[in-house]
Image (cartoon, rainbow, N blue to C red; front, side, top):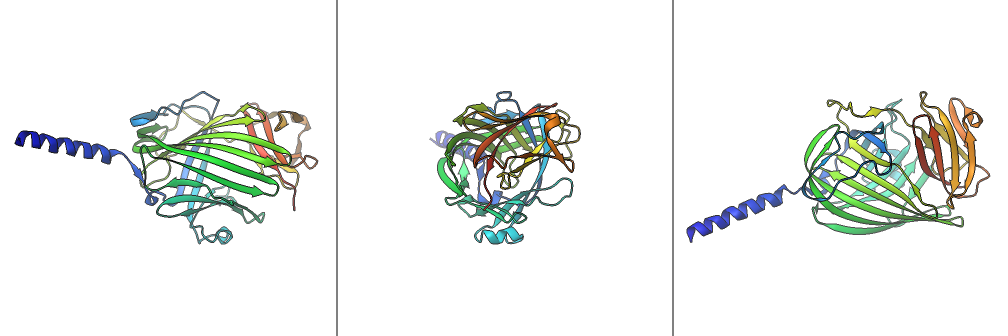
Length: 344
């Protein structure tokens, strides 16, 4: 009897140890600081996010594609002017401008509690523009561990455009992830499937976004694998994206990092869509489609307006709504969904 009892004790200890090996994400893991990342643009279907399950190893060490470095600031409210637009916010996230080292004016505002991480909206002090959710989306619930799932619905109305998002979260795996920056053990993967419906100005569009997010205790997000599919009224495959926390001390020779064209602002309120193009990139063509799939704009390189080293497309005569901008360069093809919103 004693031998059997001892065996039971040993099995219980082993079982308890295995359970403890499964990572659990809590509110304490949403830390603040400045975090460099690398985002890699991938051709649709070129890479798989990998399967879910227990003790999985996800190996993205040799992932290749067009990459761009980005540094994020996870800050605390109060502390910046944008916090006053969201009195309940206690966290914000912003990008760092690599040319100046300062924060970009767009700040995403959040509320962190012991039970959830909630996205309140965004604020741009320079443009005096606030984007506030009427039904705020939940980014995470706490504590979160392998096998848990939850759903959430959020909405926001900006001028005449109402966007509703249905999210399904599943903590579908845990184990080890290998990126070009290193190997990270005891990570939890969360699969987030979002169905985004935008209605207004006589049109309705539906987009599906699937994000696989790897979290690790006591540090920033390790990696995100994103897949975007335009569903209706036109089906258009988009590039996948893999973003990972960078480490300057580790080699990333498998990735050729280069700057990508940037389109801004979004939404377009004054009818002018600007494009910042790296000096080593040449535009071959730009085409714009409405949400029915009809091409409404086509320009060749020599026809695009250049002002002060930047490029601009005049969209003042286009009605409010969502549009797909397709830019072909000598390096790749980039697609963005932009919104035209008339100034008040």
